[in-house]
Image 1 (cartoon, rainbow, N blue to C red):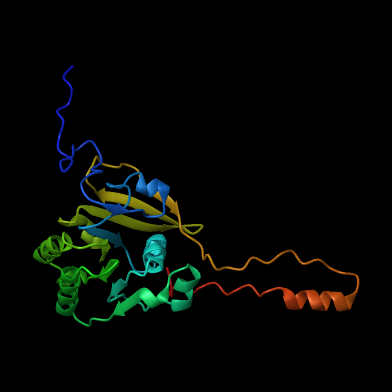
Image 2 (cartoon, rainbow, N blue to C red):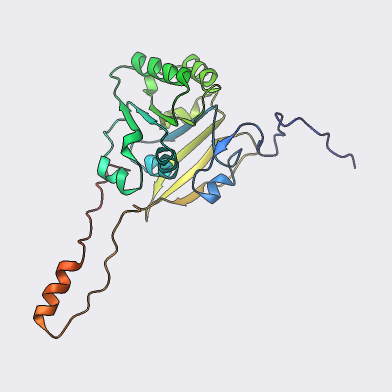
Length: 245
């Protein structure tokens, strides 16, 4: 049997993951990293996150990355999110809000311009951009992919469900579907590698700043019970679903 021909690091076989195709940052999910080329979120290319509607868990999927980048004092730019992120919820996940920048853009032309200008600056830790489905054309995506090749951080484009049936120059495309018990189904629509038949089921991260109450010990002396109640921190309210998915 003939041995496979050795290929340069920049070339990948269709039946293998393109680990050397581009650098990447770990997603924080071991199962997901095992299926992503480069074992993480790619740098220097677009990643499309496709969902039926905002709030299915797309931001919580990126929480480990956002936490890492902001703690390294790298700016994360959120361009035209459909809902204003709930700052206390992000902070409870360990994200440093000082390095989180939200940019509002009313119309599609402004959003596309802002994406291209951000990619040209190459001075960000990650870019998260929400694009209008009806105003985003293939030539726009090609221009973004070309601009992203010189970037120093991951670039995520959030798109609606209809985009899954369209062609795209983005090397990595994921379909996100919410599941019960704080889980998210991640189906790999496109990657540098073989087809992944079954979607991945991921447990979404929980707030790292949540306070766990110790079981309360009932003391026979009522006065002692009162003093115990004052030293237990109250359970923080859970973030609203619409505030942080």
